[in-house]
View (cartoon, rainbow, N blue to C red):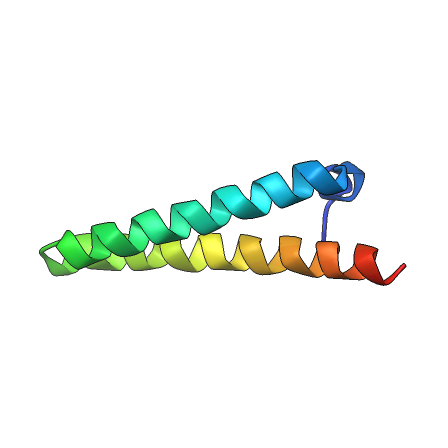
Length: 68
């Protein structure tokens, strides 16, 4: 389910994007802990879910490359 851009990333670039996503998720979790109001919490939860999906996709690409 990866796109051509992700397939063309070097392993270093892929690892960098993974690290960025992990940091984004950490920051979003911190924001969620400080957020008040159902609308803010829902918006942050949606962002966390999107970031987790992207992280899973990149981790799968990295794992498949490491098996080659």
